[in-house]
Length: 468
Image 1 (cartoon, rainbow, N blue to C red):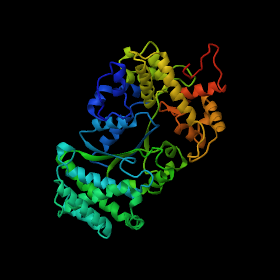
Image 2 (spheres, rainbow, N blue to C red):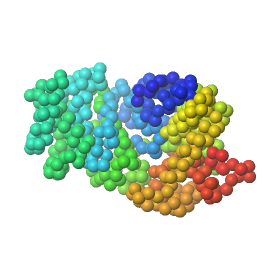
Image 3 (cartoon, rainbow, N blue to C red):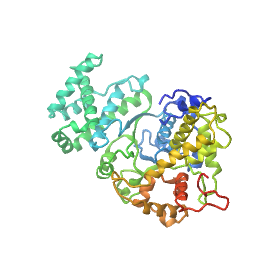
Image 4 (cartoon, rainbow, N blue to C red):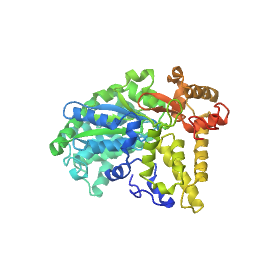
């Protein structure tokens, strides 16, 4: 991430520097901004559970799990904490379904090839650069090269890439290691822009998938051995962004249900993201392994009373990044509550309010600035509640509003997941709390329902569970 600064913003003009939407990634950023108090209000420290499982598996078995949560709860930052927490026993290789693959067209085979390419390259890198300081043995490299030997087009491209690497100061093009690096470079480009690859090659590879898994496991075994000998660590893969809406649902189902055995058979530690909608479905029993869920942070209790601990924990996150003196009295809490405890929304609201204050050359954020930020985000939630031809499954607003009201009133039988609740969870109109799996309506959506006359104000004029 490399934030512009790792000290709290001391002026309106600095706020955007410390409230970027990207996750915390470095030990310095975590030390400066991460607030552990938030774990106590959302069902405990989930990363400690992952650490426990990994430490138990070290040199004994392979730890595999899904790590899930709704958008904006801070999953990637938590995984950065894991990197720090298990660094004495594991070296982490992170890859993204969005950034490293073609999110509309990738195959299960692409995951294997990505992992093979990354672990080979990392193992051959110097130890002080995150590697093991020794390239994989010739026998393993030969297995990889021979598997691709009949794919003439791919092999020719790989050789050309290897020449490019040599020109840039890399391994010699005539060495097997140089050819393998060139092959991996070609494959990575091919996987990122998968529409360019030939159908015949894809089919050919799928027909030889069992052999590829064997070759991949041989490579993973050797790379783990080399790393452990050099550092006492093992490789841990973290695959992120498989839960993003940019990836079609059938693709994810094919990956983790139809090809579940691929992940069971790979001999490596791995943590992968997964859409909660799949984990909550009847098909979850077919997934290759269990998962850990990072819940939302409740701003209200189930009976719509203010949740002081939840609000304080989210406020801690904000005050670690922005001096409280930059907010006029009561305005920070308004932003915290309006965010619904969602950190992405919290940063978006605060940045919007700060920009509004900056436009009028003010030194603090006042109620009008917060009002504008709330209206902007509330409008976004309101738009999500409608229907779009891009929705995979059309759910009418009438059905959504009916379910929202039933959840708001605490009717437990209507908190069972179905296409309506999936839609509301996906749009973030409904939140999931405290590790006890109770659902609540986002405060901004409560405001929308009240504006439509579906929720009645209290005798004092306020909206229970809302922001006013």
